[in-house]
Image 1: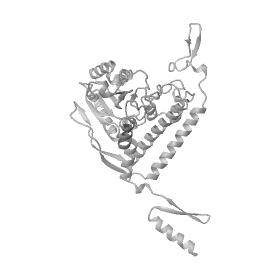
Image 2: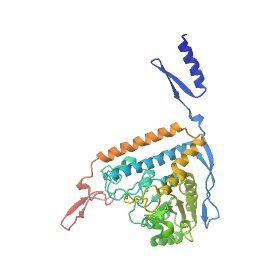
Image 3: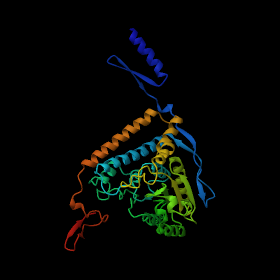
Image 4: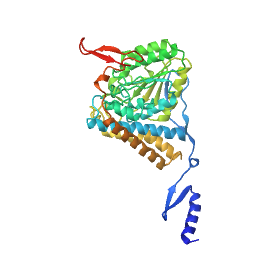
Length: 400
């Protein structure tokens, strides 16, 4: 046996002890890491921030378990949402996306934590900052990006744009401030009326929290004990107005008065998940509605016309990024508890970037919907009908 063969044999034996392989190809030796799943911690327990409660005798758990599989799933979804929003920002500045556009980066833990605490058979409705929820509810990145650019392959056939996206059991994407809240209560009423063990998550922001229709909805939901989770995503600013300047009381979780409430760290996906599970159990047990306030933060301005730094400092934004970023928080937990490797998470990042780039390519090359589609999809499962155009003599055809 030659000296080189003996060396290879010894190195293979040594590297096997460290979970690595030595591969010889064309006379060249290459060392490749091959950590097996057995090398990682399959689950770990974490202490999370205690929720403030209103009119509740119990509270969500403060010690929770996260499995490796869950952690990797949450990480991938949050990274996808973050990258998708950053790409939308880029396309908007290139004037490829036009019109209204509200980005969700910074608030990813809210959407991912909520989805982890309910079922896909449950229902969800939100305001116009809806790209992330469209994704977590089952939409694809390609469909969302194509909708943003108004293309035929968009999730609403290119006719809804940023604020009007829908999937199964997801009712938008609503452009009128606060109007989705009574609609969500109506969905919850349907769940109760049809005796389905389902609930509706009804989201709104701190800016909409002062709307009268929200308080009217609280009243009806409590009277009829509707299975609805009202969630105020408090990102500290309603457009450019801080919550302290807009609300006499910033305890949004107490706004339901007779409805029990929770105030939750909305930057921690595990806090949001546990609080949502607690709230869902409350609703499913027939106790009626519950209110959650998620304390979160948006990195971009209110919309694309808002630079986001005229009413807050760049230092404030950077401080939140450095101390409370939801993706970094989850990543640090997983790495410090040997639930994943840096290389593994980087690989996810690369895959996500590629998915986003592919979706952006599709969204800029897919054709726009033809004019003949203008009036289609007004109704579901209805025979074709004529729709009046801009005047009584113009007739357009509508197909479901």
